[in-house]
Length: 166
Image (tube, rainbow, N blue to C red; front, side, top):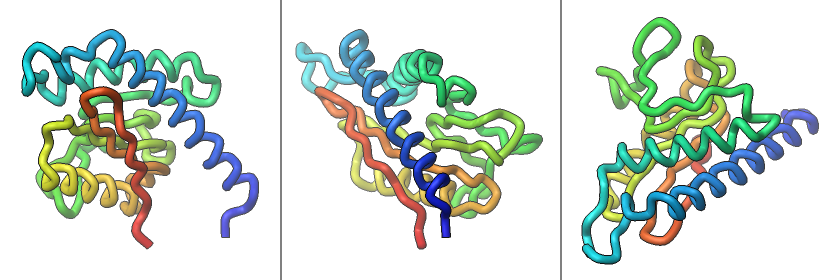
């Protein structure tokens, strides 16, 4: 059973992550909304990687302002597992999450694994990303504390926190 200190710490970190992620999302939509949705062209949008990168820039800025989070690294499509490539049972040839918050060089400080999707993504793609997040969360090797699916909707981000399977 987790002690009260650990539960309080986990709750506080998730609250700080949520706050930083929402602020980064607000900044993304304020400065780069046309990457996600352009009112002039109904179905025009940039590639998910372009949006994820810009979101990552804003998230990194927010993390650097946060006492609890500034000691972590934020990486986009990070495929390294210390000295080898990240692998999961469902991705034996390698796997790279869209965004991670961690400390490079160790798996003992893997805080958050994120997958991102655009409003145009199909349900099958979303379910596949949720499965990938759960595999990372349930992996004894990677030990991520949190998992998050971010959907870039037309007007704002949608956060779907993913839990471990019990």
